[in-house]
Image (cartoon, rainbow, N blue to C red; front, side, top):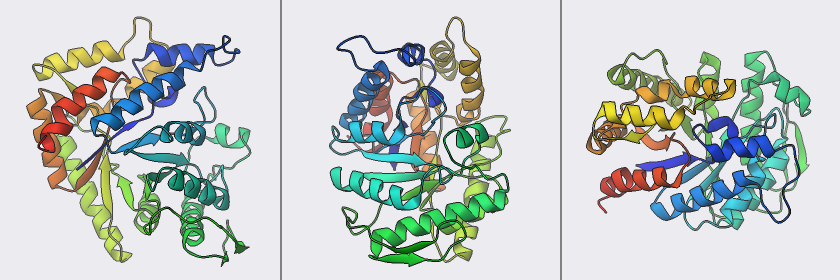
Length: 340
């Protein structure tokens, strides 16, 4: 059983005055001698996660926004960590696979084999066009491109020179004169919910962030929907002669009772004057709050064990980005479940 968290950046964080301050200051020069407060928060939070036994950080990518660039942030933080892995998001519509292959190998060697890739097929048309890419409105094209992208990565990581024909990414005698730090190359994590997208995951991914019916009424519905989604993906992967590993993004919070944990969570997530972006984020994480991982620590541990038994190997937790929450997860979940 593995445990992860998100690097704190604006488009995946709620309940953080530091992140709000970073966004407000983003279009102005920094005061002399100061660093961006979002970076300082990320460093404090993620180094504590490294010390506390977390296994993985997801550095999400958002170009159209006040987020620090994912690969730059991941490189800066990863140079300071000792054991935690860095998973960096990449959109095939914004990057060329040859470039990402070298960036990934470079980070992999700097971290002694502790990097992975989060493949994001994309949906934000404005972001893609503004930054020189193409989201591809035709869903089949989007997923064909993603499959080719991964094929090029793996090809360059294992062969030199490397060539392939392709609709989106033809490669002619490309040479990548660095190889991954370990015999096993960086793993590919991805997510999708459309039928064609699920086939892409089965063909190209190593890990799937389980996507499922988000209309769950309660934790029992959530559990049943996750189990059905895993069974479906296992069948798809088997048809491709592959096996898949599974990750999940539950919201986690503790209290003396479920009601106490819910009340505490609402207080953390809802500022006095929430703006539209905060309300949007609270709505977005709503389904993750139905996972059964909000409540007494012993009940949360039991739910995580139940989810692990049906196939979830990685829990990438959502929670307000404060060090105390990292420490609470380590104390109530990671240490007990690992027998520490």
